[in-house]
Image (cartoon, rainbow, N blue to C red; front, side, top):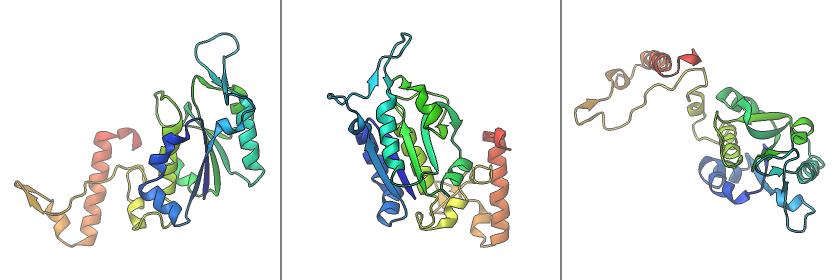
Length: 223
C-alpha cells in the first residue's frame, strides 16, 4: 500500500509516521508513505499557497492551483483508489472505515489548514472527506497521521500477532474486554480466576461477556 500525504507542514508528520508499527511496516515494504510539501507546487515566488477568501471573511484559504498541481502530478504516476480530505465536517472515521481503506492500494490524503481549502477542491478533486471527531484542530496533519496509523497497522504482517488486531475494540462493534498480565495478584487485587484456568472455551465466553457488558455500559450506541 502507498499513502501520499499533502501538507503545508510536513515536519508535523515526521514523528508519528517515523516510529513504532508504522515505521516497521514501511521498513518491511508493507507500506510506503510519502509526504509532499504543498509549497513545492506553487508558482508564487514566496511559496504562498493561501489567500484571502472571496466575500470577506476572517482567515486564509488554501488555493486550488497548488493542490491541483500536486494531485495531478501524483495521479500521472499511478491510479489512486481514494483522494481523502481531512475535514471536521466529513464522515466520522471509525474501525469499519479503517478496515475498508486498508484493502486499497493507493491513497492520497490532503491535510486541511488555515480557514479551509477552496471549495472547488472538495467539489472536483476529492473523493472522500473524513473527520476524526466533532472538533476543530489547527490543521489536518494529526488526523492524517491517525488515519494512516489505523490503516497501516491492519496490513498483513504489520503486527507480529495478527490475531491481536482482530480482537481490538470496535472490530465487532464491541469494546475490547479487560486484559491482565503478571503478577496474578498485586496488593490483594487478583486477576479473574477464569483467565488462570486454562479452559480456552470458557475464557473466550468470558471475554465476549465482558466485551458486551463494557460496551453496554460505556458505549451503548454501538450495540
